[in-house]
Length: 89
Image 1: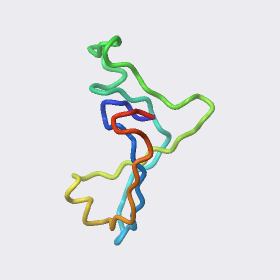
Image 2: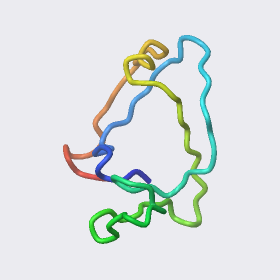
Image 3: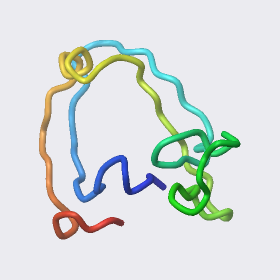
């Protein structure tokens, strides 16, 4: 699950990797819009924790680098909007 403040998550994309790229992968962890879920200064009323349902094990991929750098590693094949604009999944 992705916090709504990160993006509206209304798109699905496909891309081809055009060179080797190192990435980290592991079990998805809880997330919030602004601060770490474990930060004692997080306002629980305005920044709730979002996590996958307990019966699902979701893999989380992380590729370090900024968007401009990473865009050189991929060729976009297709992008399709799958929800109404601004509507969260």
